[in-house]
Length: 98
Image (cartoon, rainbow, N blue to C red; front, side, top):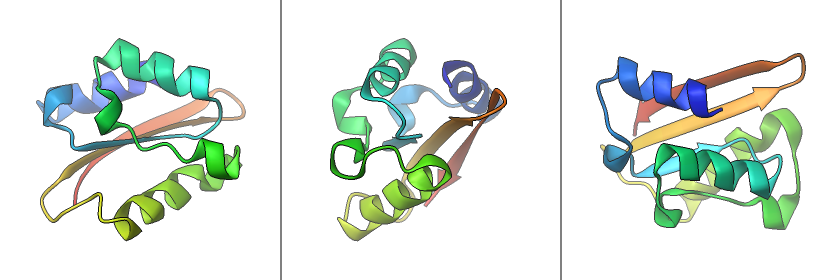
């Protein structure tokens, strides 16, 4: 996930400090924390709901994004980094301007 996130940032010519909210795949808190640490992200940038729902598999990013929007965490123009991985060693990342 770190490599995918770094590549998305590079392609968009952005630094992690410009990202308002990071929504990672909610598989495991240790993985989320390791990715955030390697990216140099702050705890305030991370959106984590793993503690409330557990690993919701392929739906985890969509559920977290919906919850972030519903909680007022995102405003128009904010940059969001979503990053996920899955079975078969698949992974992906995208940066969205809300």
